[in-house]
Amino acid sequence: MAFQDLMDSVLQSLELGQHPVTRERRTRDRCRVRKIIPAVFLGDPGSPSIDITMRNLSTCGIGFVSRRSMTVGEYLVVPLYSERQASKLALCQVKNCRYVGKGMYAVGAEFESAYPDPQQTGKLPQIWLNAARRAMAPA
Image (cartoon, rainbow, N blue to C red; front, side):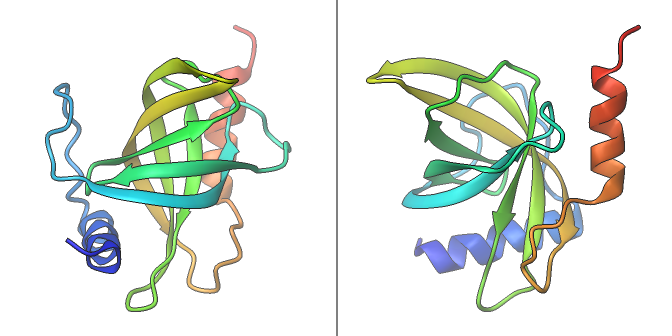
């Protein structure tokens, strides 16, 4: 499947809420991708985005490499832009992270929800920021 076709499928799946949460690994077809995209980690409110290198994409999630180690359960936001469909920001939850060498980590994350980003501004929805603040607040 071509990257643009898969991106359209991912965006449509997020639009329809058809991104099933599963406990099994690799339950959907994946497309190999080598694309640098920005990511914002919700555990660090106000922090700048960092570049990650997307490795693969499916209708359920994203695989990437990063210089930043991540913990399972951590949330991040990535942009999903398409020329043929309305662009979105995807809220993802880290499912696995492992050190692969030379200061790089391989990460798998699952899509949780999406927010429209038709102007491709990358502005995070306040509801996601509020949830991140609540999660970080001391008990």
